[in-house]
Length: 375
Image (cartoon, rainbow, N blue to C red; front, side, top):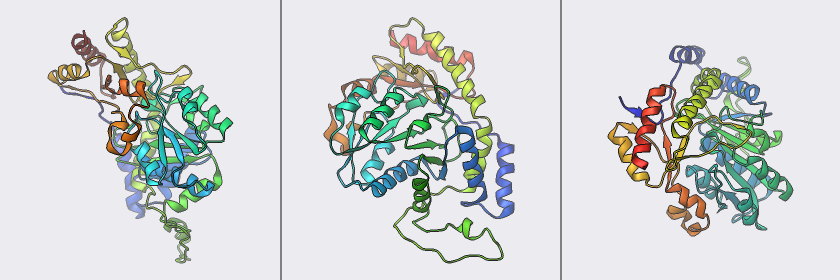
């Protein structure tokens, strides 16, 4: 049997019932169901604001865009980020003609606070912290640095749906937090995301910018069926980033099962931990103290990753690599050599299958193949 790294599970009948409501009401775009999901996410996380979007990438871009224009950042200003991430984290910085400055990572594969401090210059405006695999790393220290230095903290929480840091959602520490509900995430839809600003005025700006800069969206203008208000203003050049009710309908159902599903992922991680205990050639990436990780990834460090991957593939097991050092890509090559630990780990880290249909026998089989290939 094939063992995939990810395989999302959907509560199909419940999802279809939620979608059916959208179809019967004739409202599948931005509207009643996106509002319901935003309210549900705020209740789940305790965050003050939540804006449902068509992807987490859109959310990250909106966060950078809103901060830049609201706070008067200039082209060429800097955001400190990590080279160990999906490229969208850093692409959104380039979208706004800002400069990503890469800081190195720690043993959790998250930003190293000491290197963050070393990389701050007079042009630094923000830090982009990525909670890779659901791990919070040293987010608390990075947040404190940002507070002391007057920098905005953007949390790329794409993997962190359900993560808790000292009992709370880590988004509380950020000026803007962005979550992903892409197809293989812990809370899967087809693709969508959530942008959570701490500041209400910035949340309001983001809502306008995500609907092409239009002052009042279609749902707001159609709330009173007897007095449709067609008139609106367009004050800025915005984007079509808003979410739709079909994705929100799926999200509403999946959210109900998120904690239970994450509990199972943590159980799978425990099985892996037991299987790798005492193995010198296979080093699991640790979870930071105080972090109850969503466990989107289970990652290990091995010395000869290519050999391990081939052995897994020969047994019909399909792992992943998260991520290639972004400074290997042409648009970031100027930063090559600036983050040696990140580069070393990017050539050694492997993501093992982490999904809801795994059995303990599956996990033990994966671990045996990894251990045999790594020894």
